[in-house]
Amino acid sequence: MVRRAEPHLISFQFVTTKLVNLVVEFAGYKTAVEQTNIQLGEALYLIFLNVRPQGQAFSTDIELPYEVYNNTVAVDLSRFSYQASPTLIVPKVLTHVLHGSCRNPHHPSKDSLAEADAYVANSYKNSDERPSLLILSGDQVYADDVAGPMLVAVHQLINVLGIYKELPLELSLPSELASQLYIRDGHLPKEPWQNRSKLTLGYWTRKDEPHFSSVKAGNHLISFEEFVAFYILNFSSEAWKLVEPFGFKSDTLNAKNQTLFEAESRALTDYIATLPKVERLMANISTLMMFDDHDVTDDWNLTPRWEQNVANSSVSKRIINNGLIAYWLFQGLGNDAQSVSGDLLPGFLKSFQNDVWQFDKFDRAINRFGQWHYCLDTTPKVVVIDTRTHRWRSEQDFDEPSGLMDWESLMDLQDVLIHHESVLLVSPAPVFGVKIIETIQAIFNTCGEPLAVDVENWMAHEGAARKLIDIFKREDTPKETIILSGDVHYSFCFSVQARFGRHHNRIWQLTASGIKNEFPKGLLAILEKLDIALFSTWSPFNIFTKRWQLAVSKHKSDYGNGRYLVSDSAISLVRMEEGKLKNYTLLHGTGEVTQFELN
Image 1 (cartoon, rainbow, N blue to C red):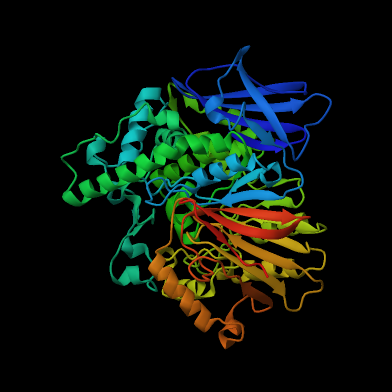
Image 2: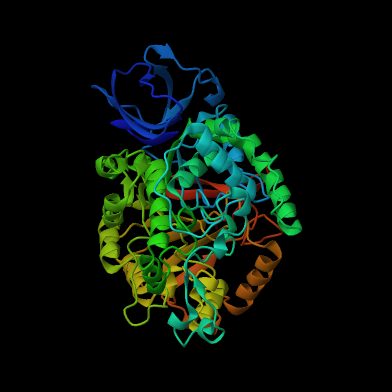
């Protein structure tokens, strides 16, 4: 993968089965290469190369061919190349950006990253159309929603590569994997109903509350080695050649789960077939990422009560930290080219003792780490925010949803946004969502069930919502703010302007979700009609929303005779001109294209 790319540094990320000395060379440049090796198994290495130009900086916004050498031997990169060799673009003035989120390997929809690869391949005919940046804004993996054959492949890969294991967790799971399939959720920790608030339905129905609230947690990842193998299988076609999960037979599966296993096998087979295209894409475009909940587990840090339950359970805390450490390794380290995240490496490497991972000390370090957010100095400036680990928690009611960012983080965001003409703001959850869906979430929250409908919209928390709106109304904030979001499994385009602002500005809410996931299409059609009926421009219900000070316009698409909510797996292509939005397009995994009207 090509990760962070700037004029003074380009970062590469490799996974290898042997320790190798790699060099990346660019024609016409003298460079210095810094290699970081992280051994994760007997035959598994995660390698980062930071390539720095000596003298002349890397040229920006043009194609730079590169070659990789193992010592002095050229590495065959033909399968990663569109032409003679792979190329990349160091982004400076952004004109074409690919963005998406929510990539579930066993969802029956097509992988839209393969369609992004096809678009980049075609852009060689017209290099002015070539994207210079790929932004993945959350749920790059689904640790809480794992297919049965995927879990089998995970354990096979652990054995094949000798992936180092951690100390076993104290869980009452069956010893054989065959007996664990689809039943892990029943063995994960729960909070007894007696400890729940009397204001919730769960107390009166005497329903224990699972710490892990995903409704598809039957194969939830648990151990660190599972997370490591899972990441590799999500991105590497070569890894699948080392395993044979589809011939797995288990007498312990009932008829329902056997049917499910077969359906997931078909979806994964299709997914594996397109992985080489995804690898080629990521070898030719700078890719930046940010976590959302499924990268660790569903509803991660949604309420103070959720956090408290996890903190009070050593097993739950261990699983969450395993997910966070895996994110740091496979996503976080490349986002900032180890400039800040690399400070955690010494502590991580010291955690491998007596042939096992022992993370007691490292857990404290990674939980204290507060700089998952980052920026990229481009035009417009890219600002990627962390909406998971700096939550604005309610002190009065632990069952209330937390704000996505606390006061201090919002003040820092304000400082980053001011004095820029335009900004590309990456928020995993949409800042401006669909009002009817947010209203339904508010009703469930009033009934004490915020986890049931993922009450994770910006407007769900009074303080965070008002502060964010105040930031957008300031006269020194950007005239053009383009917000890229995902999370919701459908796509849309809204534009927002302050009714009583002190300067003319426009905010674009561009939501692209999912790359390989979809919201139930029939239900979304009903919700769209309700939203139009109840929250039209002149509807009195708008007065009761927290964003009444802002005028929100919904933009139609050419999908389904003018739909403005699109549930069809896709990755988005954002076209800009002089820092302002020019076009917003969805590239569907089926090869179809959806265009939004911006006027």
